[in-house]
Amino acid sequence: GCGCDPASGDGAGMLFGMPDSFMRTKAQEVFGTELPPLGEYAVGNVFFPHANPQALTDCKAILERITKERGINVMGWRPVPVDNSMLGRDPLDSEPVTEQFFVTNTKGISRREFEQELL
Image 1 (cartoon, rainbow, N blue to C red):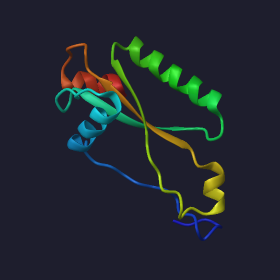
Image 2: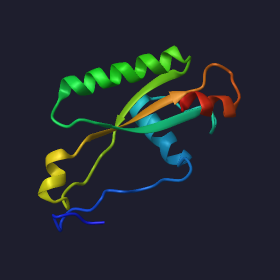
Image 3: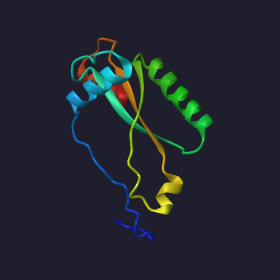
Image 4: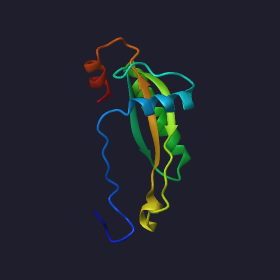
């Protein structure tokens, strides 16, 4: 869709399925380690407030604490590269910081249980 700014869309996008080989490459690059088998790790896209480094730090700390409390291993964060050269003024003014949150199943629970823990 398009709002009042003709250079701005709704930003909607969907990803179905885990791009396993891509995530494995990125995990190796960012963390210097291999991911466990598919289904034993998860990657979430997290959107943080822009222009607020303290909020970014606080939000990450909260997500990491809650994840660890659930017994899920936190691998770390990967900043998502973006090309915002085509964005209009309005979206640029509110563009979030996007990072990927990598976690692994170290509890030895089933894939289904792991997925439920992530909800």
